[in-house]
Image (cartoon, rainbow, N blue to C red; front, side):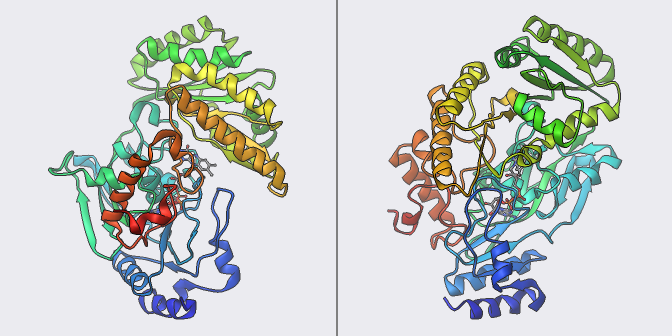
Length: 466
Ligand SMILES: Cc1cc2nc3c(=O)[nH]c(=O)nc-3n(C[C@H](O)[C@H](O)[C@H](O)COP(=O)(O)OP(=O)(O)OC[C@H]3O[C@@H](n4cnc5c(N)ncnc54)[C@H](O)[C@@H]3O)c2cc1C
């Protein structure tokens, strides 16, 4: 491919100022929040569905792969252009198009940040529920592609439960409208198929999202434990008692230390673990629920349960939780985030085994995660400059994913497969299962242009699948 000519054609579509093809610029678009790098041939900034169509058609003309990029915060290498080609930067398609309060829907462009969307809805008394901890920098398009979760997804479900329709540009440049404002549409649920497809079925250019009223009241509790087992047993006990808090998040001692060194949110430094439990709903009911949860926590070994007394105290707890990955990044040159999911009753045993993996590979592994969903995030700390250490990290990560599968869980809760977990797909799927999924990819993308080389260990064979 003659990159300069490809870039020239892209300039015809999006304008001269909206195409990058020089070395340093391409280097900036060659990585995301995972650990690998690969430069694209060009980067195109798009502003409309029509421009996306134009860019995708140019890619088809040149046989160039393309990959949509939002905030680049994904942790599985989803935006790395492993086969070169064009990065389609969506960040400037960031408008809130409509808030339809009567129907509890909003139409929004995919480049808008998740938090920006929430901030636009809040003054109207509404909210969009999926809230990845990265919400300041992650776009709604990225959330859709990864089927993102977040603390509030324990009670309310992940992105797929909140996206009802989409406009998409298919890999050949055709525009398709999937779903819509209605709660259900006849025929196949293609919106559901597209959500979580990691950019491999084309580019989403508009989202129809479900919005809900902001709850009347919120109460946030911090339960403090001297053992991880007791903390994780409490998670199942709360659910078994028939209670569904809005969030049930867990952070262990190493993470608390990093957070306190970074943000100072008032977490105790001398405990083994904390649970952040948030209740929402009618104000009248919250006091009673908080007491019931406090009793369960104490019965399962909490040495103390604090209730945030005002918005500032609540905000401090969430600043600590949402800032946890960033805080850990201050104490290590790099880390691998594992994203396994287990039945929540298996949390005590799996956390114990994660500690054994940490010892076995001589690597520090702090934990901060969505405990209510059983969605673990062991963070394996290491120095990327040390190849031997990196190899150990990869082995440790795979061993943790194997553990998750052994106890009836799976290899991803919310971060996607990307390039990170292509091999781990074989822990969950047979070759036939994988081949069947590759055929779905081929139905959308026979030329294998839309984010190729991702998800499947056989991705390079997509074009030849029978
Ligand atoms: C500190 C930190 C905390 C995090 N916390 C969470 C969390 O709590 N929950 C969670 O689920 N994830 C979390 N993540 C992971 C990440 O933020 C999410 O996966 C997020 O949804 C990615 O959004 P993005 O805009 O950065 O997407 P990108 O990283 O830019 O892209 C992700 C994938 O989406 C595709 N894509 C992007 N835009 C489009 C589009 N318009 N059409 C089609 N495909 C597209 C890309 O090709 C890529 O495959 C966290 C990451 C970090 C760094």
